[in-house]
Length: 249
Image (cartoon, rainbow, N blue to C red; front, top):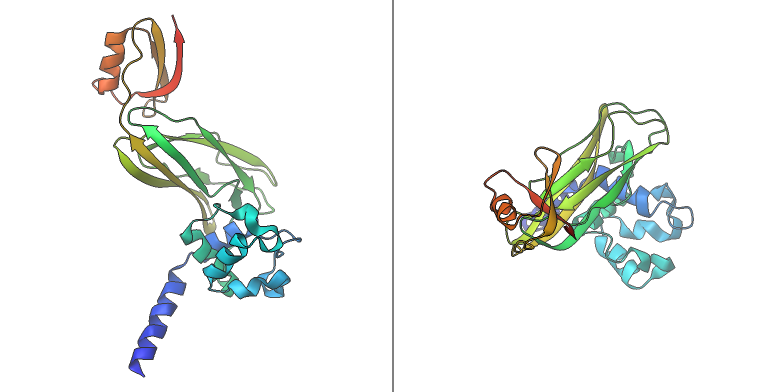
């Protein structure tokens, strides 16, 4: 008897650990279309309740392309699938987020240490039905760069965007996140970031103009001097990252 009670409590603890608010946000972004499962999971449109606390059901549906769900292959992390499954099981326990993001995870792949990857634009949409104030974005770890184009206010139905870049400081797998919050709304919306830092590249040589960006100063800098490039890339004058933009002088 105690053994089964113990196992039940472990399962209950796992369900409670899921982020219902994030599950709701991801569900609304990818699954709530009327042709899919609809905005009300209790209606059990296209058998969505099969996935209640069973993320494996969502994975199977995606892998088997049930109802065209193969378009979601690679979209969700394991944590996101668990959150969605928990939300389907307990929709009343979630608070609707005031905003949605065009993506909830971004993988940059390999990026050289001391350089900055190409940017990825993320759109923030006001889905609350009212004007928002107190919109803010958290800064990711220093292995990533955030360029925020959003103001603290966002009108009804309006959108804004921000750019994220990988800027690894060390070799190996790296991850972080950007969390979007709105004053008065307890739900948060997150963007997961990941990259793999690779060995730093060398300077481009003489007469090649190299562009750098300093995320701490929010300034750009260009130079064609190979000695100056080496000094900048050594970190002696602050954290300057190669943007990848070059041209011959």
